[in-house]
Amino acid sequence: MPFIRSSGVLLHPTSFPSQFGIGDLGLEAYKFIDFLEKSYQQFWQVLPLGPTGYGNSPYMCYSALAGNHLLISPEQLLNEGLLTEADLVDLPNLPTEKVDYEQVASIKIQLLKKACENFKTKASALQQKEFAGFCETKAYWLDDYALFMALKDTQDGASWHTWEPALAQREPEALEKVQRQMTDEIFYYKFIQYEFFREWSELKTYANMRGIEIIGDIPIYVAHDSADVWANPEIFCLDEETGEVALMAGVPPDYFSATGQLWGNPVYNWEELQKQDFEWWVQRFEAMLDYVDVIRIDHFRGFEAFWTVPQGEETAMNGEWVTAPGEELFDAIKQKLGKLPVLAEDLGVITPEVEALRDKYEFPGMKVLQFAFGSDPGNPFLPFNYTRNFVVYTGTHDNDTTVGWFNQANDYEKQNLLLYLGCVSPEGIHWDLIRLALGSIANQAILPLQDILGLGNEARMNFPSIATGNWAWRYDSSALTDELSDRLKTLTKLYGRAPHGR
Image (cartoon, rainbow, N blue to C red):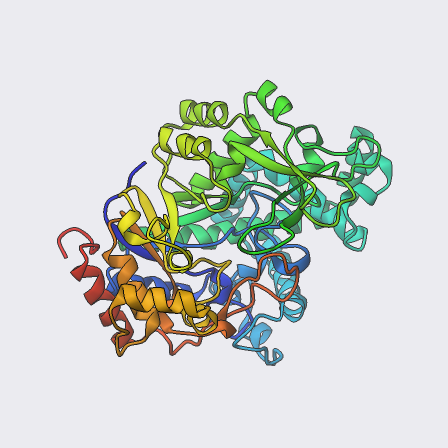
């Protein structure tokens, strides 16, 4: 679905300032939306919002549909009467520039458990009614997720396929027994999902009322150690005896890695999904559209053909391409949900077949300026080669920041870029690429906040194929100045991307 000419900012909520060691859905989130509105931006793009597992990657979550409880704001819980002022004093001093996930979790989980106990005894009749309604409407995924997480706590975090067979294989009698035994633990996980979505819904409403739409992110794959795989093993390629991943997802050698990327997620059993009329996928899209306005499909090319690697391989080199029923899937989703507001992350090894699938449904593809200057004038990432139905980025969460990239670029890339620009502006190379993005013909331009702030590689969000130490960057509360907003607003208006009437 083509979009009007517009622009927005890429920023994950973990990067907001806060006193609790991680960004959350409290006051600073609202200040950021105010900044977007003042700057004439019309989109806020986030990474997947799910509860993260090992490595804290939002692309490896314990659920494709649940929210990350670490994003819940203690100040919002205070406003709701579920925490007291005394609960929020004498907390340890936490880093402000990076997220220490382990330390944050130990502090926040105690606050969330206290809030949950208070909810049981202090919730108003309206709150109780809202909670019951939430649990009922989300039961199709919430029941499995809450039970999965409660069981995981009793197993010291071990992956579900190592649990005793009766639980790993979801034998009804075994599940009924633990459900009776773990009512408090299950209630807790349902409560924190209720609170996450309550806070997120309020924030989204605030954004929408100010002309800001939220672009959410669907990773094509889900984590093996997730409620999704545990509850729906038949739609994934698993070893029937052990429950381990039989066929792993990834990509062959590419720009980011000479040995490819081996993600470890199970690929889909598309034959089984076809038999079910893609119900799991339809529910996933429908649930996403409850809390975002536009969906970015990560690794879109995997819906045309996907790279699969056999169990036991240590790199992604020894894999093969397997065709996927992308047209059938998107036809089924369109038939049930209507025309979808979707962006296609079509980076990597892109074939005419992938482009045809993307274009059949009018999904905008992606252009990344950091990829534009390493070859000749035929490079598809150069702005003069774009057509309108694309989204242009200076860089993504998988890239270095523009300043970091330019400082480490080879001489050929630097020379090509400088020749293309004609000169470097006094504002810095990051504003030059921002100008290129905003001035391009692409309908949408999305700018990482790190580039607007002109930060170096210390602010990089992710190093693909490196499992730990990512997703931690945060900005300072003083960073979003009026001067910065005015500069971004001026360029946005100059290049015809301002909201209608402004």
